Length: 88
Image (cartoon, rainbow, N blue to C red):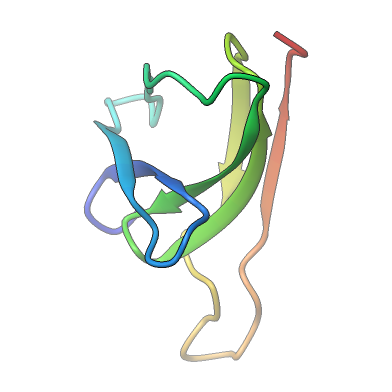
């Protein structure tokens, strides 16, 4: 990400920031916010440069690979994000 931070946000309007984490030297981060009972949709916001919607129920361990941009200003290419992980 551009500034090395990842934010967990609600999907409401406007989104509410629930948690943030700084990337470490291995580009890893940990977010420890509680999710709503029954789970819900949340936004992973990569320093405002790229966003991905995730469904969280609580206790997941995810692996996220992201380009760090929504749209590349030089090429117009859309940024991609791949999220894989546990079902709790």
